[in-house]
Image 1 (cartoon, one colour):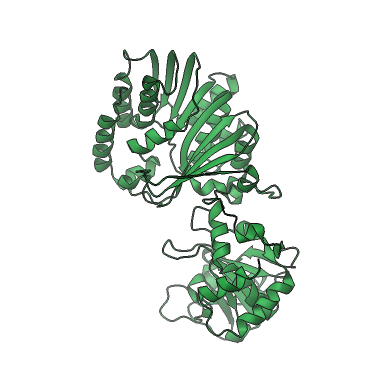
Image 2 (cartoon, one colour):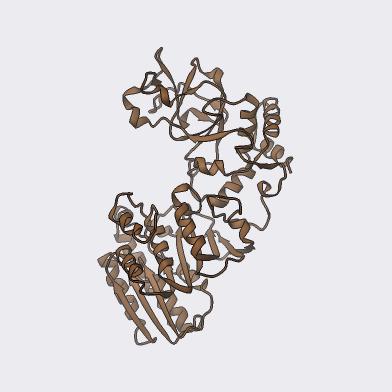
Length: 491
């Protein structure tokens, strides 16, 4: 075994110390530790291909390609000839990349192409010309949003790819560049698993590949700890053009991989058959969640006569009408900061956020009539124990006939009007349960909670939620233990 990665890892750490965080963010590229690189290579299926063609897009200094070539040398991936095509747009990194791959030439039957071009542009051209089909691809793509009017977005549309981030663009293009039966191993943010913006990307994966394996790191800051990356990452293994079967899901606390646990799940636990959004779930246990097995938690929001919407007041668009404190010509304006557990602190003193909105013809269309509502913050902090934090809006808190809900809140309502008190209380209890939190974490790896996420949950029936609300009103302080015990009784 050649095993040259120790030197590459030392170079990676040295470069990382000399590149500013701003530069890393601008490029959207974070370099791969050798432990993770070797693990990713180990996820490739054994192969006896006469010739292997490997794509490494966003190759950095060559950690992934080097780990792959070490595996070829060790005989884990048998092949008589290897071609590596590595893209790296950063001049400094590309020089290190060339030196890394040069170490393997002469030791293996190897052809290497280190390319400086824009991968998106060159991949689009290859796809349009129906050229360059790869047998393997290994990716640590850049993480950066793509503007809807950018050149990259326009290029991607030429080959039918609609996506919002460089990482999903790189993977989607790679899928198109693979030959039948080609294998892709990629480490990417987990954000693609849910949300409307990544639905086209999920459909590309599900239509063209089989998901073979997913690996999740339990500590979100450990996969790229030297670069201070807090994004929750997932390693995903895809095979082009083969039937979908069961999926291996493994987990480890960090990149040492010393406590790796492995479970195999039927595909209908990964993508639910009746889910129009095709959310990708990552169950970390063989045990089924209560939301999967309880016959009493089967209702949709439509079934219980409710809707959920993003708060309609976008404050920067209504800036002239914002008021720090309420007055006779204003209505309450509610932000996440006004809610703490089940209590409402309004008007809130000493906050930078306004407490009220001037009521006039321009703001009237964004207001809801006073009533009981349930709100869920769209963004929870990383320190919070639960991702979904639900609160009840009590109309008696306000001396007003209308309310404004700011855009960082999700609002449960009925036709933009309030709902019954007990239904609101019961819905809040259910949403604040640990069972819901655990289920939500299966398909969401970030702190954002979208209205679409909430819309696709299964709920108890309207009658059961109402009974939960009646129970909640008699309990005084609702502890997490009380909530969980009550929801567990719905087995």
